[in-house]
Image (cartoon, rainbow, N blue to C red; front, side, top):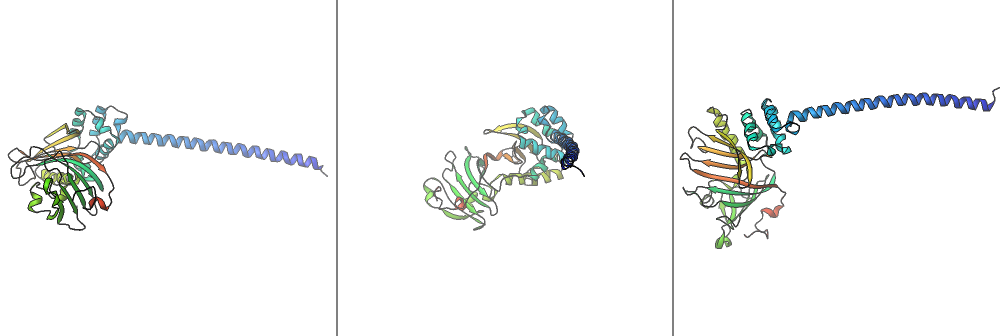
Length: 323
């Protein structure tokens, strides 16, 4: 018969030996797991580094080398590269010569695809703009300065002419869900006490602009660029006549000048100059020239801010407004 104390000691010994063996197995497993995790993290880091170097090489390379590398990418990758460079701020950090070299090196379809994929605006936003149009042959001495609030689905627009422009005090409201073919507004000055409904195609609406109220916003210019671009391609025009960098009313843009072979009426203009925003796929500036070489339209978006509006933003009863 075994002594109880001996049995207990032997039992403890066996348990201790098994525990040490199990502990060694667990330690080996944990060590292997750590190695796998470290290797995986290193691979992921390498993949991320490779992707960053491919899509946004300006982060690690000089801008000039980044331009050279971007020019070698296929079309789809150039569009992705351009979007990433704009969103990251790398595009606006380039100097003028680098920007011109970059866009001159791109595939002719890169810019149209970048604009087409958008977004060319926000679902709901507020912007300020300068607008000049030649009406009945007369070019205004000063641009209209406007504040516009716009939302989509349904399309609703509030516009106010600001004090430093020639039509100071005017206001309009357009709500496609209520009257798709009419807008509500009043003139400035002593006539601002007479708000009325008027056709968006009527004489009053056309007295200050060749456009409809629905054309307000960055989307219209982007779509016009794409529509005219198809006409250009049909006659073999795939690249702009000139690319340069400009600062227009405090806004730095990369400007593309397109010249058409015949001009109006086949095309919107004989010559178009479009200034691309350096952070977003929309144009901040547009200039249009007629067959006589004279400018007939100039639009500059000074500020563009995404905002959410309630119903009062498009209600004449809003106490902020003067209807």
